[in-house]
Length: 182
Image 1 (cartoon, helix red, strand yellow):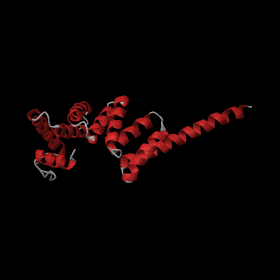
Image 2 (spheres, rainbow, N blue to C red):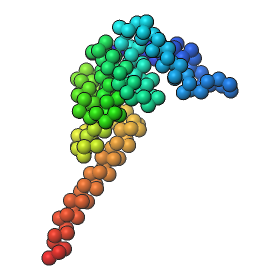
Image 3 (cartoon, helix red, strand yellow):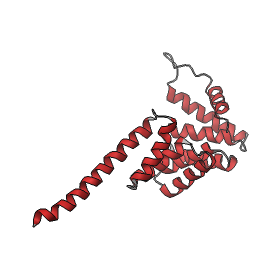
């Protein structure tokens, strides 16, 4: 998928990428307007997977995860070899608490692009939530190799370290307690 072309199309759909001035629509209103225009464009060209992908991104930015899931599902159907469509689907599924299909979609994205940061971060979050610290750490490290400043990956890495430290402390306390009782 050509994400640059999608960004250009999104700019055209919103009419401008200039910041809102006094009396103009706020950025959120512009996003809602872009969403409405994308939905209309999809009705006109339902086979265009890039439009569905762009709609999924907008829905995610608005926190509409169910709508994002629907848009990304359509994008995946139309663009089966686009890693970004699969990782977007994975993120929407993960946000909706559907870890198993989210991990499947993330793995599909990674099979298409081994360095897809969204898919790697989805997997890291799923592993972290499941207490699988090593797997979460490995996924974060892959993201951070490409972008050491990725805020989400840095924060998840902190969570990994904190959870691993708490686990080690709990294990130490459990081993120490029986000896203290003697």
